[in-house]
Image (tube, rainbow, N blue to C red; front, top):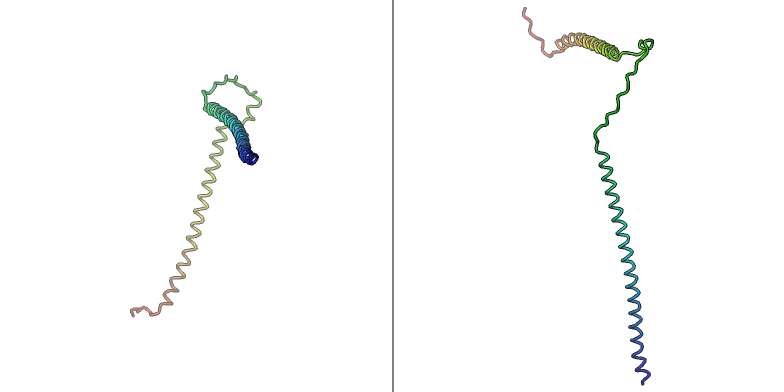
Length: 145
């Protein structure tokens, strides 16, 4: 009987001890995971801070600063033999404007010719349709004798 009593007390005690041991290992694992998570969070915070600093620096560099005045280059001169080969920009502009004016005038003339041709075509049609409508009328008009 003493043995059964000792066994009945010893078995639950062993179970409780083993459960406590499992709980302590689980707690240790949980604590280790928490510390790893804290380390990761700190690293992430540092990365975010570095990123915001980079963005601020980029924003500052994008802001146009006061334009720097470059030193003036000395005037370059073209030898007189080559000045005739270089086209004058104002002369080129005037020639271009003259060409555009000529093109506009030519287009205007063509438009007027087309309108005249259309008007000339429309007149004979009107004249030919008018007598045909008179001949086709159902009741002849009374003519005075």
